[in-house]
Image (cartoon, rainbow, N blue to C red; front, top):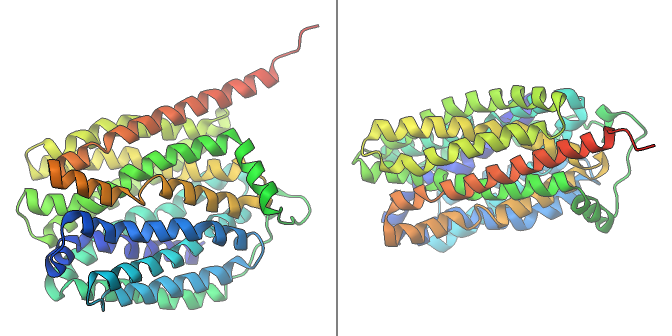
Length: 403
């Protein structure tokens, strides 16, 4: 658990450091915001395409070996990003980062699911996903200050180096038996066709995937463009903008992720669909705060709204991933996470940095960020309807039949 969480921390540093140096990249290569946004999008596109293959392998071969190779791949590519002499080379390096991170993200949660029983998974996955706000914030901090002091290239070198040591540690991790925490005999992987049919028959899996896709579109765009918006809108340095937004992200993310794990496990014990209930309300309440935060007119006020928005949005981290674990048989969990990753990023943040860059060119970065409140609100409604359906289904099954 410690090693996997540490790797996830580095995972999000390498993922978000590019947003911290987006302005510097655009200035050096003399490209517009839509092309700069493409540097963020290409990672997600490749990540999305490779994820299904990683999930298929994760149900069949030792997962710790997949993780070791994946971490080494993305770490070398992150360091290589700092050596790029043109936009095309940088795009290639960010694509290789996507290949490595796809190998990790699809299998690591399934190992945790095999280590802890169902009643504890929401909290344990929340601890694991604390790496999202911590790693994202560190990516902003590291990128902002190293980029300002030594240039954006050194930011990539510093971000990528720790992963090489973690790749060695991952190679020697033990491999838990698939489904061990659920009891029963050892599990055999299902053929890919049967696995896909099992996913599509699970209405909870489909609901979670749709809600996460909408959420990922919004959060991916905010993560990429918010530091650049703060830097230009309020005329502060890259270090200040990234430190401020990174600080907000880490505090709000930590509090929201831990609270979401506790509330999700508690709600799920009380009623079917409890995980979806907590996540849906978090997204629905956070949406108007996201829409308002670029238009406050003040640096501190904008950050205050960002704090409360992120606190509510991060409530979903543990509950939604626990809901995916519960929605499919243990034998296909890696595949279920892989197809989920494919769907949420293909429909979500694979295009949002680029698309919001287009909006930014025509209407400004503030409007580009504000419209992210719309998919968040829709995602909240989707998850709440899924929670209601799940509860109604259980109530109907428990109702006594007519004589």
